[in-house]
Image 1 (tube, rainbow, N blue to C red):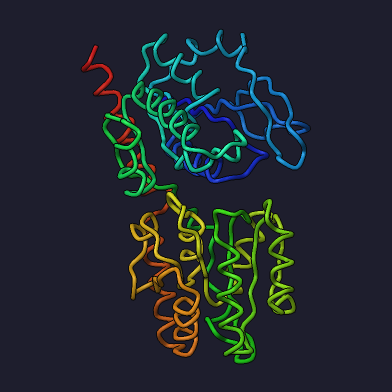
Image 2 (tube, rainbow, N blue to C red):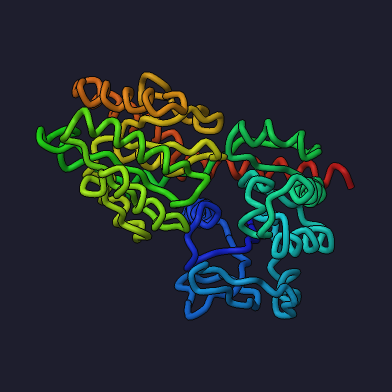
Length: 380
């Protein structure tokens, strides 16, 4: 199969959408399919892999690490019919996504759209406004785009349940981002191998929607009752400095380490040295980092989240706590006081994560592509 993936960001930017494209592209290439990626040009970056097609782009402020695509690209317009794509896969509903829809209609190629996130909840990032009118405009824009697709992918049931509020009326399959299981090697030491130090870890974007101020307060309560606890927050984002200040006010700054943005390889290493993964976001549409922590053999203590409950087995590989500081702190303490249970949950977590491997989910993605093609040509 010949696939074109269209997105508003790609390497060197690394975010959830980019990770999804990279991992599915890897799976498709491993199965000998063609995958071209269409994305904005990146400042001072040269692609190492072939068939990455770049739109001209205006660099945004360096701290954003993004560029704004200019979709007037005659070289791509000339090339598209010559690629003879079987399916177009849009990962954003605007700008480059709009180009995907245009090519789908002009070239009569089926289009799949992955509804990656709750777009109306992030208007303050990309529009600088956060009111109901703006949210309604975003919903309508996404609805109009999604209804041009032949098939939709949702990363979790939480997104499927959201789609009626957008007015989307297209077939949908739940298909999360896969986990590169092979990156997560067997643990060098068992969980809780050091009786004098217990390491809790969070990995992800450091931003308001991740609820990390809550997580720090939870840790402060737990650490007050067990002095062995340490916490590592891996990731960068706009609230990093605020969280450092909060850790100091809570008098836990000597127990909390903020790494900032790090390469994926370091994330893997840090997970392999931790004892327990903690997660407090309630705005996830999937939570790839949770699956990656489980692939590293870590049990999870997390706040109840509609999206994440699809991927975990409470009581077997994780503990799900209400969004209350006392309850989540108690869940952490109960697990670290029971090493046998914690290690059993770590093994169960790894086994669960294996169900989301690249080969397993790539097979399902190809089924979605075929369903899109069947629907597209059936309606002509």
